[in-house]
Length: 320
Image 1 (cartoon, helix red, strand yellow):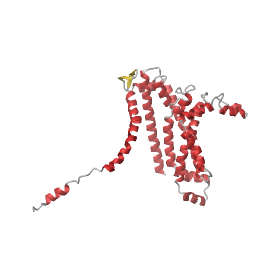
Image 2 (image 1 turned 180 degrees about the vertical axis):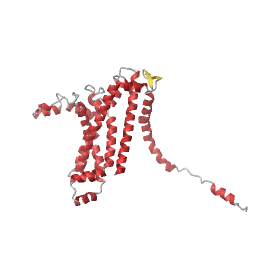
Image 3 (image 1 turned 45 degrees about the vertical axis):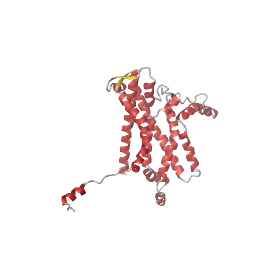
Image 4 (image 1 turned 90 degrees about the vertical axis):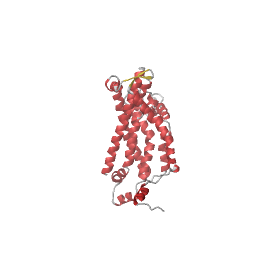
């Protein structure tokens, strides 16, 4: 039997072991395929298409020539585009701030109440969550009937109880149309936010509250020093989701006021402005490029603002 030299032993031991392909291990990746296809088809593909379209002039429904950033320059410097964009942009921010003050605050209060020793809490959870199950179009249609200035249930009720001075064309006035739609949106979403906050509240160890009670902490002090800090992750998440939802808002305004964002553009947001410019404009091909530019700007606003919010909340969480 030939004797192996030390160098031969080193060469043999240095050879890497063959890796066998484990089909069962990689089978789980196939379950991601339907989600990846849906995301690519309805999210990535339209986004990439909008970015490409925003750099072209249009002739009818086909691209004409590459014009670089001209659509963006037109959008931000020429009238009436720049005035309409700024007006819609302000309304999106108003939508966000009022939603935070109404929907999230109310949802947190409801979560605190239901998390206490309240009888029939399961019933109340169901009642508050029911609006979330309704279609946005259905909600918009129902409230359009309720808020009708002449035959609507709200004004008829106010008149029947002697409060005629409060009767108002809620959706027909520039002073109240936007805030009315925002409050309707808050009513529709408060149930979902409440469930998120409730799940966060129920994850807190009960012994912490018992210790605070033994130390003589009042209910308000316990809420502000224990409950809110320990549910800050849920508050962060819902704030970011609310921001994204408010800047993507379109369906409810379209269902109640149409794509014009009336009256007199008082409920116009970036979503309705994009739709009106890209699909309802009489300006032909140019509007497709301008509409794509709005879509790209809207995406950048949402992406950058969401990143800033996440960094801010992460830093606050680290400081705590």
